Image 1 (cartoon, rainbow, N blue to C red):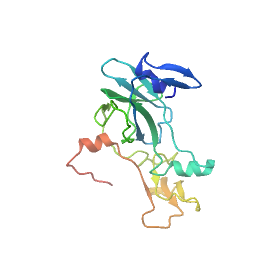
Image 2 (tube, rainbow, N blue to C red):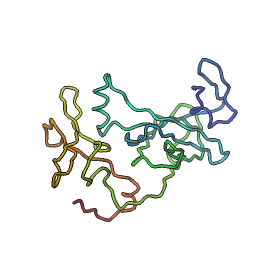
Image 3 (cartoon, rainbow, N blue to C red):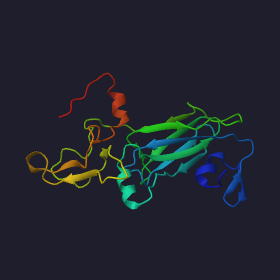
Length: 217
């Protein structure tokens, strides 16, 4: 495996550094997974994985897909599929996963999508249910972010469904285009009925409100 601390720290002193960024961890069978989260505001976050039995832990940095040009990357960043990923490989065990913001405080990245890789040929690998994702408490009085104020400074965290290489379609701040001359989030170069804007809703609020209804105004 890679000898990076965000790969081997969870094993304590088990792994042997082989040089050239490689390490050998005898008797360990690993299965990979990644946690996909919202891309907005999570660039300096870490994922803390902790072994609940022996206390070993490691901090995992995120990755995000970069396009071939800066303009395409900026455009793609507001696409719904452009989430940030925290990747980890683990053996069987009991683990917790906790997101930490840039200040090291527990945080929640709006939603978490847990994606497991194919089971390896060896035995003793992690599986669904071995990891408990910790969630801080949340106030769900207001679901929509960056909405309702008079002055809009950014389009984050609004998303669009207009990601095409060949057309200049995106989100923008519509100065004075909102109610009573306020600012608005607008789309441009929209060509299809499914094109438009939206944003991810905090999954903790959706869990709390199962069986209830929201009214949008």
